[in-house]
Length: 83
Image 1 (cartoon, rainbow, N blue to C red):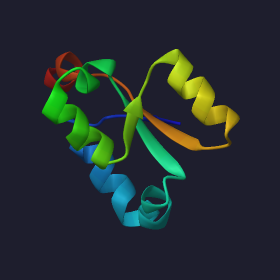
Image 2: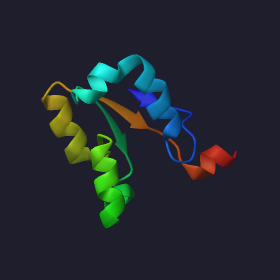
Image 3: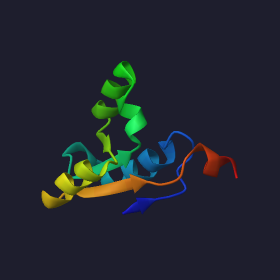
Image 4: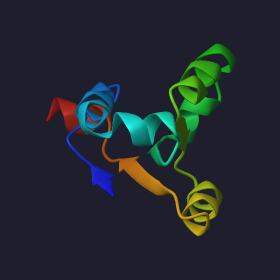
């Protein structure tokens, strides 16, 4: 499913889902997909993976959906947040 609005860093998505979906987030049944750019920076990549974020790439989403996982896709970005 799509999550919007989310803010510049996607914190809104984490906060909104965390209160209702803590067990599913902890068990990695619900994953939050974000830009591939977040996984290109070495230390930031590990931080994002630790939070349970996944790549929004086609291969990644296809793999997760075939496993029966729920994926929340963070739409928009900084440009939309400033509008």
